[in-house]
Length: 134
Image (cartoon, rainbow, N blue to C red; front, side, top):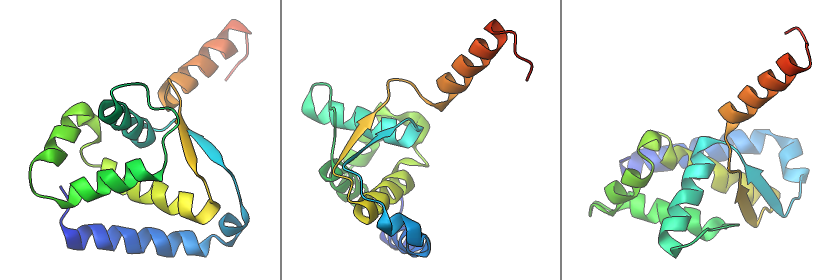
């Protein structure tokens, strides 16, 4: 669980890096679909909070997650039990996603049922079935 100073450092780092991407500030999109593990983990947490499939979710889910991460009351560890493979990346991922959402005006996030690895595997299988060399 990151300390408050570490969280602030991550937020500053992300804000500075995103500000360097001038083109990103010109992009305006209403929704995005996340296939990465951290975004899918946030979707799973949202689903747990709402007791149903949480599609799409919005920045309030990220804000709640980050607020819980700042507390030292054990609730954060409970969240991590839902997504144990994301113990080291859920907070940085949430900070990055929030920064991108603010910069681009994204209001809703959809999560893919499948991740990057599944997409890679499917692409490889389709190439092999088509007889393509790689």
